[in-house]
Image (cartoon, rainbow, N blue to C red; front, side, top):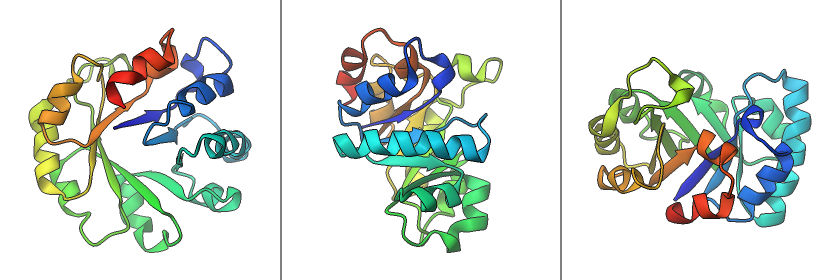
Amino acid sequence: MLICVTHRKLCQEPFLLRLERIASQHPYGIILREKDLPEHEYEALARNCLSICHKYDVPLHVNTYIDVARRIGCDGIHLPFHIFMEQKDALSGFERVGVSLHAPEEAAQLADTPATYVQAGHIFPTDCKAGLPPRGISFLHSVCQATALPVFGIGGINAERYPSVLQAGAAGACIMSGLMTCPNVEETMQPFL
């Protein structure tokens, strides 16, 4: 299974066109990351992205902005662990609630919460985290052992590395730069679907 994480500034083509090409392949979901945007600009972009995702029946996960997700009628939210723990009692109505975490101990705290999936990383070296050592496959395995929720690895995952991600117990992978920059979206996504 594959979750696309967006980073519009990496795209070589118009971002919404790239998003539509990704959505047409029916990934497990799309996380609208875009951390640099102020809330009002993020909301405007999220409305356009939600329309595209509805067209292909692909879940959109608004990143961090809980109020934006509610205002635009998006039933998916993705939160960093610390925000999730602060807001977990205010997430009623969301069908999908993703949590980014960086320790197996955090995964163990997600039992009996609204969380529906976990994003764990970064697993392999990646330009997005240049200079930071990857946590590795053993870390991913530890996270998978610490929770019954589906775990998606992130960070430097490609088709060649994907089998080791699954062998570690993950449900799938999250890919950002690889999907934002690849020349052929369909070909790049195929091994993960």
